[in-house]
Length: 453
Image 1 (cartoon, one colour):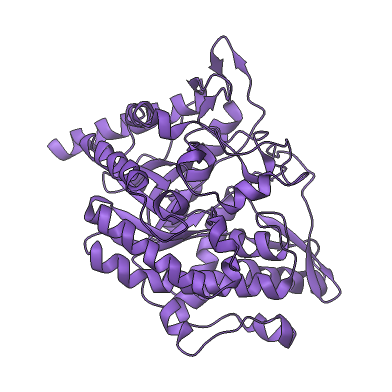
Image 2 (tube, one colour):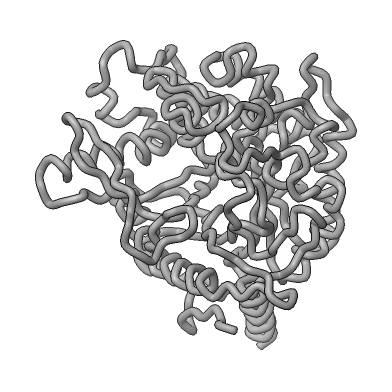
């Protein structure tokens, strides 16, 4: 079996650097009868929306099996566990608190703490309660205020027992893929609606920050954004301009307002009827200081010119994951150093998601996924190079702990370092999980010896 290896003096080997695994609520929890329906429950019921016609009603049965899953996490030797909270498991449609649902997360955090594992909570990972979508969802400005109320309920319950709170996971997906491209729930296709959803999501982030700081003053508070370096399909001026516009539209659109209080200049390229409605004071709310920036990275993107705008060019040259994504670890170093060059010193960063789907096969109760080991090794080296180039990266979370419901792809894509049989719910640690476990446990031993000297 291949091993994970890093340069001997890498910052990633220090005791200060945090390693963890990550999941999200809708993708693993199940127990749908114990929460309010979300937009993804509705989306899954619509014919043709999910690749295999599946849903997240059962998923990995994590709500039922969470104690065993926590033991599994502890066995890996990680420092931290990143997970999201299901809004609809905490707040009922009538606005009351579901105490049993909230207690699930309190018990989870307490169990992690008892094992010395820090909890990193994401408040929103795409599963908007359907009762809010019925009132306009992220197109309704009031949803941002409802989010702040929900954030306060969670922070009051968990407080400083949580190491970090991320308000949102990948608002790009919740806005562009969901309200502009129509690929994700609720499946709307409209540029103005995509831009408005993006603004209201960022407003929700800003409105929640004071609530989180009030009730968890010793925790870190931030947001998780996904980034991909945008490359031109050719060296033509038109394609290079298209790639630059894509970078502004997909990357800068979410980070720049938080750090500078302004949208990219590309906003002015949009027709007046396509621009988001921004109320006085919104940008000040959005641009409050954050303690950390969560970064999700998977691949690069390539764009060509299309009528003075941009159009993506899907990769065809191997190596590709089963998602059809190019394996391009150097892109992580590229995009973070580029963002720091453009926007100035970035906040401290956690790589909150990084992983890949491959055609895993169980043979004699083992999954030999050497390609995934190579993927992790290459991307950990890319994180090492980020630090060498002056980007302050404090931690890394492998995506994902478990094979799970992969949104519009259903159960056809396996990202986990743990294989899940969705019929029996049996968990099998893949070779990638074994390699990461060996790396994490060996690292801990080395740091303990070094600190003892």
